[in-house]
Image (cartoon, rainbow, N blue to C red; front, top):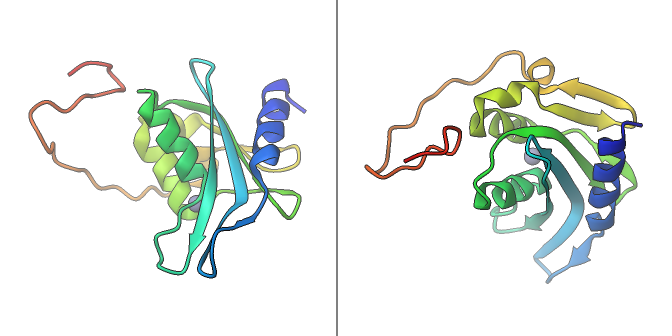
Length: 145
Ligand SMILES: [Zn+2]
């Protein structure tokens, strides 16, 4: 296995431990690790809650990455507490694509030693554009205000 993916799988696997939070919520059923183009690793876990405000592990890892003003993902993998690599859901595929145009080339591990570029997993892209919400928006792809 590619050394980077080996490390990402190891990180995601460490996080993939389902924890009961209450009668209504649990977390950690899935762990995710991603590697940015600049070489940093960010991780996340899922939250499953009956109030419908849960989120995927990929989403949580992307939020961690964005907190550090990065958005270009080189490689990403998610791992389930059931002991297997998980392919990202459709929403996360769209999210990966939307946070950086270059992420169509993100390498996504969907099963052991099975890796696709995001553009192969998402051939038809949902296209919508958001308007600038304030005058001081920061464009982190261009790294300027
Ligand atoms: Zn997802």
